[in-house]
Length: 482
Image (cartoon, rainbow, N blue to C red; front, side):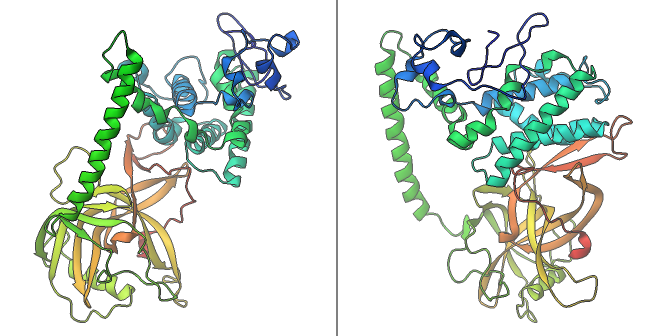
């Protein structure tokens, strides 16, 4: 790589041996659009690192340095994710900060895809990696980096999130510089991907969230076309015919899905879009959750609430408690219920733990439930929403007061925060009936073993989900609130 290896600014690389490494100076000079458009006319100092005039500069849409957009899929996932793994896998990296024996997943698992490294950044680093980082400054810098990468992979960014990205990147760079000065890391840590990371705030101001112009959008299409193209002499014509064929196939699928949906029978699907559905009511008397896209999927079974579900035999009491919390008259409750193993909630398919025989666990969820915030202090009734996590035992429909209520029997976990990540208190659960609209999203569990090298003293089960470190701050509830 050239000493002037950044296509965005005029940073000069340093070479302690092989390779070029780029520290972020306090003051940088950005490349000008003229250095790309008029390569032969500008001063030599303006075109260092460029090999010639780019053909893209002739386009009317060419806007300068950020026209060559930074790709979060390769730059962050492959670049930063793999590099962070290099820091924690036990070599001469940050010996005073990281402890424990690590298996090199980069060599043991063939070659990770970019999406695998993305999962490593978003879910493994803040849980299994962070718990082994004893140095508080190192752990905070690492978690701030994870939060920044999470935001850079999102579709939308608020003004506050843009400011947070900029602040976190400055903090991360300052931490690396301080570690370099102390001799805890080598200059080789400052790769071109680390340098380009500092340019993301300016690129976001120019083009918006990086996810919108990421290579992810075309990778699947490229793969599908590459497998289908067979011609060696007329590749362009072959590719054009494939594109037309795929378009026709997808159009047929859309038309068929419309026809098929209209013929689905009530034995395999329960929907809640008509006035007969039961919904919670807020203080103003309006239905809550009616904008949710929810369905129960078959096979459906007719049962009674006196049956035992996953070892829980108190469903009648839980059901009565639910209706009382919603202000429903429930002196006479029918025993008949209709159970389902699966539910469709806002674009996500969620399983139940009842009769679960799949290897993949898809029954842990995040809940948002109305609770009385003054319940334990003896003051007036005051409803607030709190976040909980739990395991779905069974989905079921129950009829009361001429309404069909889509309900869920869940075992709610007791949760604490470890490094700002929700972690389950092992063995502490509480059964509860909630409305299906209270189920917000599917979550996963990441389990670690307690060792002398971790900051925790017991085995920890972390809760992770796509919006972790990116969505609104959780208002965690406790089992005492329920």
